Amino acid sequence: MQKFFGFWLGLMMLIYTVFTPIYLFSNSSTDEVEEITFEKLLVSLSYRGISQSELDKKVKILETLNIEADEGIVDALEDIDGVNNISVKIIGSRNIRVDSRDLVDRSLDNIRLSFTDKESRVYNLDFIVIDKSYFLPGFSEMLGLKSVNDSILGDYNNTMKWQLFENIFKEEGSL
Image 1 (cartoon, rainbow, N blue to C red):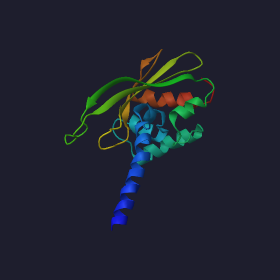
Image 2: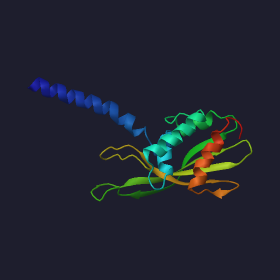
Image 3: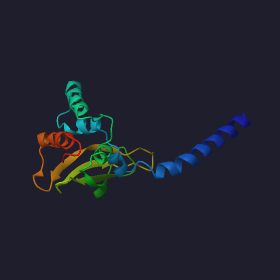
Image 4: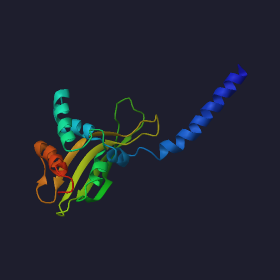
């Protein structure tokens, strides 16, 4: 029994020694936005919830544009020749308690993904993300797309948000 306890204790110490540095430097709010897939973004674009059939239709449209639903939005933007100045940064933050039973506050971040097309139009997509917690470890999670705007048209409504992605990826490099 003593050997088993010693083995278990040693294994736990090894796991925490490896896990702690990896957890501290991974999965921040900005990483969450950089890794958002189109499928997750489609769900967040729907203000009333999206049915599976609607999601499948949008995924088929993405496939006709040569975009995989599980591809990250930043990776897809980097593949287009006319898109440059891609940046992801925190523009605002506040502390909240996600659940009334939570013992500690978590950071609710407003993350901006911005990029420029070849016509020098600047696009800004603002996401709401709950940052990871350090006490009772949990990972960052995107709650939704707060707003979309560009330097010419201003703020986009829900229909325009989807059209933005259709227009950007309609023909690669045609921005």
